[in-house]
Image (cartoon, rainbow, N blue to C red; front, side):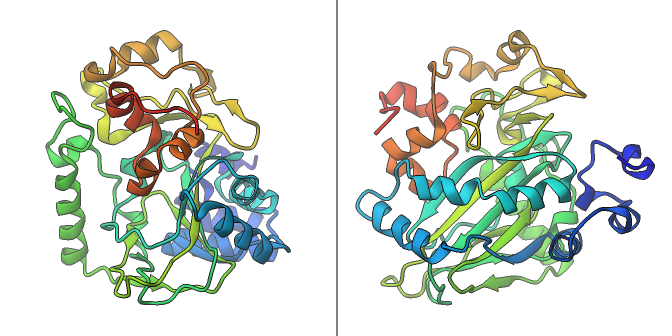
Length: 334
């Protein structure tokens, strides 16, 4: 690590105020260099997905997932653990990247624009990103991905910034509408311009965790929008859900069931090079979730495969199980 990089080891390279000086000394190939510059300046970067057999892989995913929307699938995992993608992400962020969640959609989500940072985040912050890839040519009437370039540079919004709290809530999304209201207000006040992504099959989009993005309206209900998004964390961080956390009231919704899809192993929560004790993680769990815990061997991907309605809703599997699935007697595996 260079002297300049060592000044801020807890800030991703592409998010660092030192980025212009760091990038000149980094051992990046030309493709990674351009991707890093785009991600730094715009909050996203368009790539060609680096798999020589992508067309065949995409077609197999569509065929396999069509009958039941989602399942544990070798080709889904293949895209998630792509070696070149992991290499690029690890170089750009300065820590080893690992995939922890995949979402496959046959149609557009029509989801209100949002940031990933409110749903899953890290400490140090911003060590999170998404990689979305088109499994077919995407038409403008199919509800394509939309995003707001430059919005990643806005402050990461937490409950305290909005004057709200998760304390006393009966459901995980009781105050989520307040975040949508603020995002709408920021876009209007700052004049942020929306862009739409209508890629060809095999084109992908890397986005920073704080980039505002969502799904456009599906103007033609007959059109599909087959895609896969994989979310990545980076090693040596603590991982949690800010929406459900109020740290200064002693309430932190740690993601203590996190699985590295690359290795299949559980990922420990760490802070400044030290493991966070399991006792503290249990103690900090929000009061409404303390009487519930993830069962041994809980696998988020298998839980979503067993509950396609949860997958379709785009809800975090750990959050859903702890708040609803355990009480509803949901299946843990297909």
